[in-house]
Amino acid sequence: MSRPGPRNLITDVAGLKVGQAADVAARTGVTVIVPDRPALAAVDVRGGAPGTRETEVLAPENLVDRVDAICLAGGSVYGLEAASGVVAELAQAGRGLPVGAIRVPIVPAAILFDLGNGGTKDWGREPPYRRLGRAAFRAAGPEFRLGSAGAGFGASAGRLQGGIGSASTVTGDGIEVGALVAANPVGSAVMPDGRTFWAWALEHDDEAGGHSAPEPGQAVELDLPAEARLGANTTLGLVATNVALTKAQARRVATMAHDGIARAIRPAHTPFDGDIIFTLSTGHRPLAEPAPLALCRIGAIAADCVARAVMRAVFEAEDVGHLPAYRDRGRAPGR
Image (cartoon, rainbow, N blue to C red):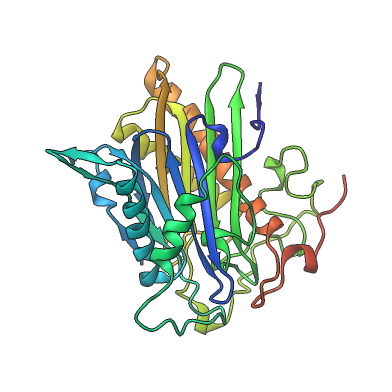
């Protein structure tokens, strides 16, 4: 029997904390995932125009296999500076890869595009992201806000407000899997009826408002945003598990988890999206044998958690000034 964890957040994976900070006037923000101790990590970059920092270090053939944090940010290229703020905080705390007498914090990062959402962007030579990265790190804890928060504060999901979503699953034999998503896709998370999520069948405990079966025959409609916003999209995600994985195995979980984006957003993985999913493994329990079958199970759970996290991101989002929120435009059909 598998159920959401007690928080239904990625922090149901023991040993993880999440911190967030936002600049309301700029309509942007930062989300930081911080393991209690360095955690094994991998990444699968599917986007045609990704914005990343230190993702190559996570390749299976490269030396470093543990990270001190993962940083997700709005702001496009400016947002990559958020990781510098996280690095500074980790260094102050004495964390990082030991290189002789020096500690070097390892903080891979990815960004989404929210520069066109109407917020105040006249920050001159001092974009707010380093400051937001430090603030997000300091705010890290087991509880965090969904919807219009952190890296998803100024996000767009098709023609609706995007946001931060999270979901978890804990199996009867103690496997913990969680996902966190900053949903900013060009596609839609809801069907043409305007109220039913594409991933409605995966919902647990009314986490996205409670959905019954939709009307049949709702095909994908290419009702895409204005051309000025095309190419200004990305869904960022992170999946985590308490199961010990190698870098190659963690990469496979990230690859499988991308299917959750396709289950929750249509169209998905378009030429206009720069989708990225990280995997974190805290290593608190061994991978069961036979390992390939156990890995299939973890990846399948991770994909469903990603889809649920996308739903929750859009469901919990608020109107922050540039697009209508799901709750204001449509309501989930009752059971």
